[in-house]
Amino acid sequence: MSSKENQIAAAGQRRENLLKALQNHAININSGGNPMAVIYTAPSYIRNNDVEHEYRPGSDMMYLTAFPEPSSILVLRPSASDGEKAILFVRPKDPERELWDGFRHGPQGATETFNIDAAFDIAEFPKKLGELMKGHTSLWAKWGEFPNQDAQLLACYHQTRLRTRKSGIYPSVLGELSEVLHEQRQIKDEVEVAAMRQAGLISGNAFANVMAATKPGLNEADIAAHMEYQFKRGGAQRSGYGAIVAGGSNACVLHYVSNNQPLKDGDLLLVDAGGEVDMYTADITRTWPVNGKFSPAQKDLYEIVLAAQEASIAATVPGKSIKVVHEASRSVLAQGLIDLGVLKCSLAEALGEEGDEPAKIPLHKYFMHGTSHWIGSDVHDVGRYFDGSVPRLFKPGMAITVEPGLYIPTNDESVSADLRGIGIRIEDDILVTASGNEVLTKTAPKTVAEVEAAVGSNPLDA
Ligand SMILES: [Mn+2]
Image 1 (spheres, rainbow, N blue to C red):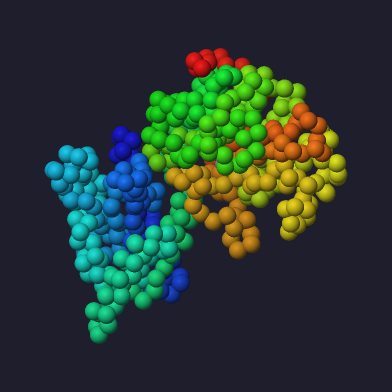
Image 2: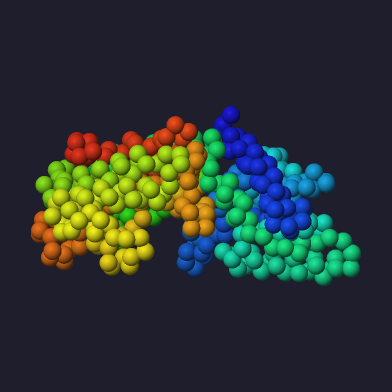
């Protein structure tokens, strides 16, 4: 089967799983046994005047249908007696518009190609939705993110209640679909894992090639453009998020996005970027010397971050949690800074007590972000981190980033001058498996020896 056929088949299975889970959840919360759900794809956005941003379909819609067109809406009815459990509303065929904007499947094409029970022109959605609501006891959607969608759904819900109040069943409960759908998305299926492996492989290779291309005299912009080129040349459809390309002390700005300064001999370069393959993104960070050789101070800090990252990856196994992974990095980073003389206190003091204000935790000055987030179709992927106050335990099929870092402020006079202005982060994507974990991004050079061998081996023209 082609990749597209695999995705369509997987989406069908996911709809089945979601329909069952939604029905059980609706019963559990006493909202009656007959829920329906509405899922909108991502809207298109104007960039300026009549130009749109590049369109990227919604993750939930693609997960459940693989249908990539804008302005599409999916209606799910777990217990539909007419057999129409999954209904798509899509843009109609339109030769004139297709001449300008490209191919549209239209309702018939959507039904046939995407294995959907029924499909209609999007213009029919408001009227048909009222009909479809009848007989259902609860209406599930992702509320609050897009006010226009909420307004359309609520107006229809209200009208349906008015029309059916004298007889018949109509929704009386509004449910949050994320509570069911995003639980499901947290455990990746085989087709998702295949896409994530490919995104990791391509993105890791891109990092190796961009390291090879690096030399003093280039600009952060050269590196950013080359990274994008390497992702697409490797087979990624696009970047999964805006890259951070930060030379020298720009690396201490955590979400630096200007990406337009010259790269200096003797500085480090931090790049945080990932390519997206079949809707799944990688998220990699590497930090390398612009001239191909770490200075002693850069190397000292790099080895600490690398050891922290390795300790955290080792903790990314079933039964552990993101909190355990974070604490593994914090301990290694704090001990490393104590050994270097940057922190002048005990390990326990450096780490602080749970609940301390950040300003009271010595390590926080140099490592101020989390170590991990879920990763998948969204770079910061959906799903809960805690159940109540308890960190969620890893199960096979979950995927996280592991990305400790150290950032020494340029004006920190408490440390020796050669350490100031250094920012280092190392990030990989880790899939939890039954036997432990799988690092999805291992083609990106990482040890000091690997990085020094790679950098400058095939430099870009300055
Ligand atoms: Mn990340």
